[in-house]
Image (cartoon, rainbow, N blue to C red; front, side):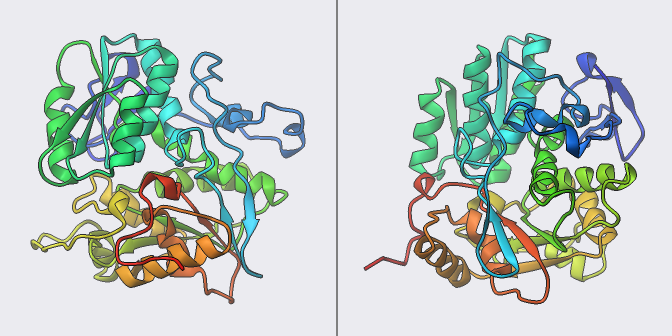
Length: 369
């Protein structure tokens, strides 16, 4: 195994001996890992999952853990904007890309139990892949989490901890349990193996588009796991000479909970210090008031010449119905990027549809005829 390193204070630790966060500053880990180039011409005939990009991944393909995740369809929706259907994953969300990495890592470390915290989809994915890997799993979620997501987590055999309060309270509760002996904290935020799983989203785009990428890659951002994975992939592809320039990363937040967008447009390098009262939002999966990797997210967007966009609750409702009318039933968090960029005509772009509509149903306040 390779080593963790802390991007803030340069602490280094072997993966097999490390705690879930940097012991010095308590920040998230990055991974000391150098990807090898992926030869586009070698890909036909390879396994039809994200493990076809094995040269770029820090773990070998796990026959015991994989559920065939990845390789989701890319569907044109307008002349310039396409959607990648990442809700067509084994657990119906893009979080499978990272969860399989965490479960395989945990399987190699043989903990007594795995714990995770989530607003729903990451917890569901970790529960499923832990079940596949034969690992005991506990998932912490806010008590207001969608009933369907709660049911899905339980169906995979995970122990469920319903936490009073918001997403941040849930994270605090999970972290309090994470230091117990024999515990592996499968954090999609703090553990960088998750990001190396989500980066396959961009490798798939690169392959599907014949070795090129759109002018803009639009991603929803709460904790930033898809955006940071995309940033990793763009850096690797560019370093290896496989793309000539990096597309702009366009980050989308709900207007009701948009700390990163506020900091970005204020020119700040990290979250602003002032207390802000956030409002409830239909986009529960990205309603993160204080993402631990905020500095990295802001830097990644700026490095590609991207920006932050925000969407209102009415725009989210309209986008969900619009996609459903096009044959795609997507949960309310997953439609945020389409709400922000679906009308673009001036550049090519891809938006991810991250979670299936069956996980939450139609957003409250709307109906279909």
